[in-house]
Amino acid sequence: MVDFEVVDLPATDHVAEGDEAPDFTRPLVNDEFWADASLSELTAEGPVCLVFHSMDGSFPATYIWNELRDRNVDEHCTVVGVSISTPYAHKRLIEERDMEFDLFSDPANGVAEAYGVTHDLDGMTGVSEARPATFLVDADRTVQYAWVAEEWPDFPPYDDLEREIRALAD
Image (cartoon, rainbow, N blue to C red; front, side, top):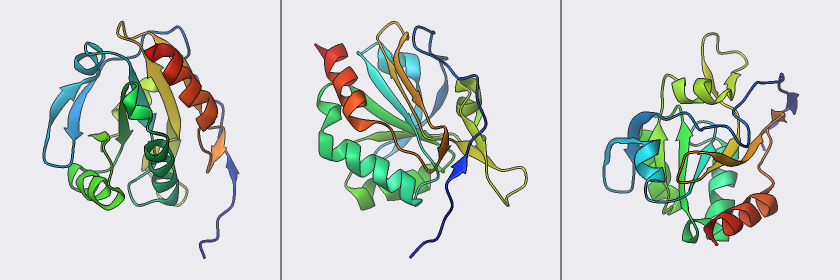
């Protein structure tokens, strides 16, 4: 059994509802390959749920993706993840979790910085990752819904997120 302590995260000035979502380009990984893609390319096709998560293989990442998969939220909008994990690690996670979601690889954590959701890892000087966060972004890249963790570990309010996704898709 893994022993961990819940840690309060410092306040953050993150992207909020009504803000324009920062655009970015990073490798977008699916179950077959990866290629550079931008958020604006995805939103040009419709709403996007951007899910920031911890490193692949961590229990929070596993729980988040299992829950989103089981809720079939990708039937209503494009759902993509962002983490510091490499494309190789993302490909492995997608295969192991039998996921239909694509994942942006952001090893330098620059996307999380742009969204104001970085989290310095305890005991790993100079290493940060994204704190759990979800942003529902419409076709104009306006953030319609935002949730950012205030403690670690923490998980999105899935019922609220699903309701917002369904409302935006209608």
